[in-house]
Image (cartoon, rainbow, N blue to C red):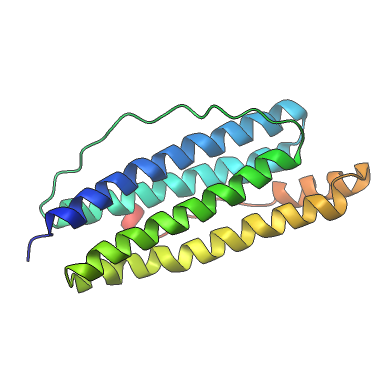
Length: 172
C-alpha cells in the first residue's frame, strides 16, 4: 500500500525539523564548550546525533514506502544565551514543539487510517516523552544546583558520562 500524499509530505517535513534540531543542539554544545562546560557540551553533541538518527529513521521509512525524500534547506539557529540556563530552557521548549509536531504527523496518519505509519510513529511518541523528561530534569537541576560553582561542576561531570548509542537499527 502506497503512502497517502499527506502522510509522505508531513513525514518529509518532520525530517527537516529533526535535522534542524541537530543544528540547534550543536549550537547549544558550542555555547557550553565555549564556557568550559565540556559535560553539557557532550550532552548536546550526543543529542544532536540522536536527532540525526530520528531524521534517518523517517528517511528510511519513506524510502521503504517508495517515497523519495526531499531534503530541504535547514535554517540557521539564531539564538543567543544570557546564561547557562537559557539553552536548557530553549531545549525544553524545542522538545515540546517537536512533540506537538510528531502528534500532528500521527493525526494525519490517523485521518487516512494509515496504521503502519501510526505504528512507526509510536516509537517517536515514546521517544518524545523521554526527551521532554530529560530536558525538564536538566532545567530543574540547573535551577537547583547551577548557581553554586560546585553544583555546576558536579552537573557538568555527570553530563560528561553520557555516551552515544544509535537510537534503533532503523537509523543505520
